[in-house]
Image 1: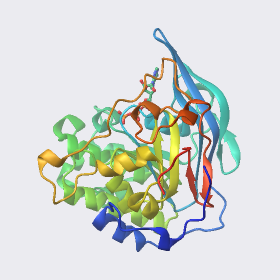
Image 2: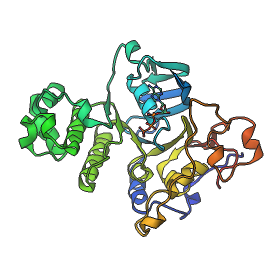
Image 3: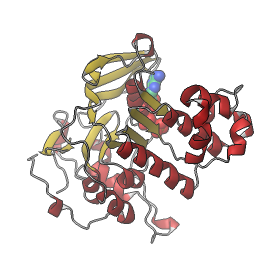
Image 4: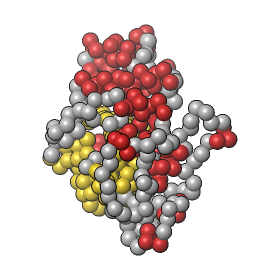
Length: 339
Ligand SMILES: Nc1ncnc2c1ncn2[C@@H]1O[C@H](COP(=O)(O)OP(=O)(O)OP(=O)(O)O)[C@@H](O)[C@H]1O
């Protein structure tokens, strides 16, 4: 594969995500030249299971600058949660670090719960919001403990929850309300890095827009870095500065959001883009990425996407494709990328 320079003019009309990208392009580039908040370098993680060794993460490289919003996009089972738990220091002790490290403001931090001395200023919004709330404490008490009693009502207002709910317990709230309280709790910590794992799943579009606007606002005003973990490439394209696409435990493409959303170069990223529903399509037109993720506990081909790839050629089976720089900000791991 030959790397080539990518310029804004290269972005063709293709199969663009129409509205989100236009909004995304309006975002200011930010915090350029500042020290990175987070660097994940060559991180490989395995789990020993009865079925064999699950190779959950393979040589992951990812960095986030202050104020930057980075999307981590991929199908279910691609390793997004394992990576975000590793960054939060929440991996359980069954995880084995095969290679690499995670750096927080330049200092190495441990991905595994028992071994991290400080939790630093990283907050995570979890996929299952009810489970992350304390069932025997009211919303007011939980938010007050984290952010101070005087901020409870403004935090509830931020996530569009009626202030009358402040004295309710989690079991008295709907799933969506629990999710919004979980988001208020995470933002109430005023984190330097927010890991938002599917933060708006199950919310109505108005609330989704309000929550994403809040995350955008905090990232701009307080330089909060955000890792937005999602299956939804359109959501990532709308709100992120950069997007990293994960497939079967590997980052296969990473680059500016507008580039990924208009003309991705890895065949998997292209298939993900093709599977984003468009307004004009009928239900019959809905597409999915063909084939299944490989079993990460089984033998893996040099290119983990090969069996699903319509650009597969004999040289793909020789050795794993390396992540190659196409431009300073754009990387692809494929011998036969789209161009
Ligand atoms: N504690 C564990 N023990 C064994 N295997 C695990 C463990 N945690 C995750 N895995 C495996 O690691 C792989 C990646 O899982 P992960 O939960 O990170 O995927 P994901 O992309 O976050 O999926 P989803 O979007 O459904 O949450 C899967 O094959 C999963 O079965």
